[in-house]
Image 1 (cartoon, rainbow, N blue to C red):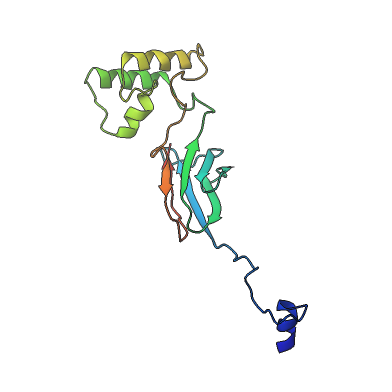
Image 2: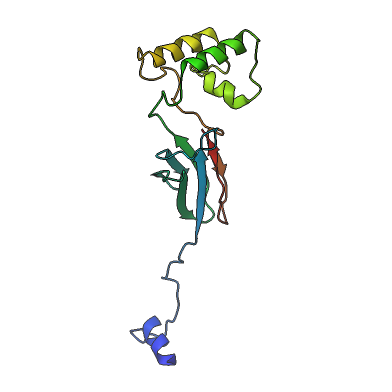
Length: 173
């Protein structure tokens, strides 16, 4: 058994038994999370992009989960994007409750409500948002011109010098 290792490390019997030529095998860690709507419903088919020391894209599965296997010690950014189905759940009732918010009759207290009603991504809800929501409902437009149809809390997650698995990197859409 001792000679087998020597034969493998020094096949030409030059007396040079080193392992300098061998590259260390990089260790990997897993980044994973879930993407769900504000209502708690898991979001299927969300495009999740990994950037930084690795570049990769995947889609969330039927349970809203995603996962990346990456090299340990790297810097990574995770970003979800969903541009399909812009009118999902949008109704005339949304116009009514947004109008009540604008008129200070029933102000939103949840930042996610404000994000959902902010059709032009201006940071607040205005009459212009109501116009765009109405146009989407009536199929005058097929998507919001100044905003992705889905926005996420947070827009992205940054992981620096990742040395252990990073589960629970979740987003709300």
